[in-house]
Length: 74
Image (cartoon, rainbow, N blue to C red; front, top):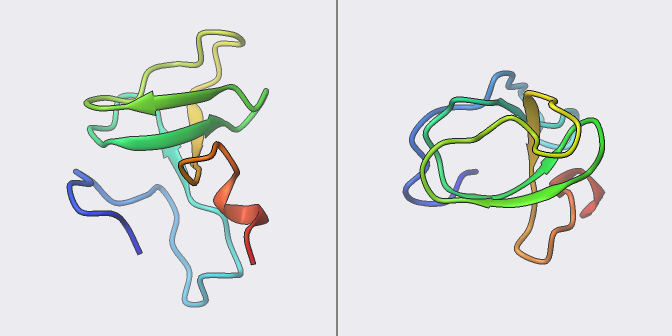
């Protein structure tokens, strides 16, 4: 489930929400907390996901507001 204001859908989606991690590509219009899929750099996005400023990666994982990956919450 996505927060209100999310502009697009994630790259991948499965039937059971605990069977996958949503990865979001750079360039997607969205807002919220995200973690770089490669290095874990945390960003707060208000318009468009950028490339990671630390490693250049283009994939992001949505995070909870404390910077914790959604995949680590059970």
